[in-house]
Length: 436
Image 1 (cartoon, rainbow, N blue to C red):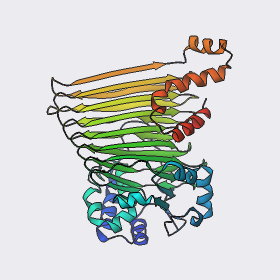
Image 2 (cartoon, rainbow, N blue to C red; image 1 turned 60 degrees about the vertical axis):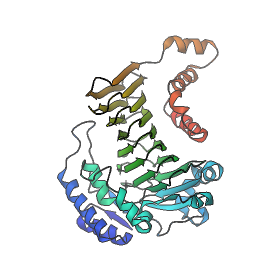
Image 3 (cartoon, rainbow, N blue to C red; image 1 turned 180 degrees about the vertical axis):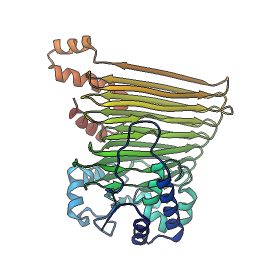
Image 4 (cartoon, rainbow, N blue to C red; image 1 turned 30 degrees about the horizontal axis):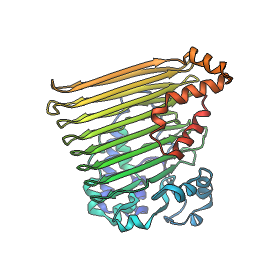
């Protein structure tokens, strides 16, 4: 079924199909009211979205399968093309695959079950773990923060729910893959991750969509809770098509001695506004964000990170690599805020951009605040073109100009690529070659 246009009736029908409790329907309707009240953000690129044309809910099956052969042909063929079943067999501890509005495939190794790890889609978590779900849902990212968190609150569907018990380490990553496959489609997954004390999780996320002549919308919300001495790494490679507005809110809270790492790759989309955030609430908590944003023809990448230091002796690092080509716009927009109580804290920000032609542009828009005298913020930003001397040197060694440019660009983003699993690094290389 499809639900196009956003009304109370749409919300009620979606909630009814999902069989949700009344409190969730009430939450959705409250979120809808706030969405209709709020305006688009007063910063960043202009957003021209016709909300009446968006398909807010579509599913192709009413089951979640644990065998690829049972997945409907349309979805199975798509996931086969991108190699998802093979990746699951080789190196993943568990995987979920969302097609349009619903997760249609989900599976994980038996050893995860034996460790009492919870890894399921968010709709299932609402039904099977209602108390745990309510404790963390809408707790870190509130529905009324902006127009698109409110929209997500009203029509959220699918996404990933993970709970890692105390003192648990996973040997292999968990992964989810999100696919928009229809014209004018909206995807609004909700992801909640809890990594309990002394535990460790690597979660990976991939996103794609085919290109249509009209726009689609992806407005997700991610809430991550990193408990005392725990570690979470969240790796994303998003390759949305050039007709997708990608407007995402991702936030983590980090307790004492914990570590949150965002490894964030932004290759596709028409307009991308994404700023993964860490709120460092416990002493000696750490937050890292290493990102790449590539803006090609008719693309705007408005990306960055936010680090909020609330406790003493906290540390954060932001490394941002941007590439603008073929008239694209790659902008870094970030915030570091060290409050008065976060004494002896340190943050390092390094933003590097390469502009490959005269029609492309890039801006760096940092907001750094420090409210005590014992803490340090270091900020460095560079904007450059391809080094002609290096290009000449490589060509003198027998490389063509295109191959030499490609080699220099790959070297520019090497710090990001080395943080990726091998399979993701290979995928990234293939995606980037389409741009240069």
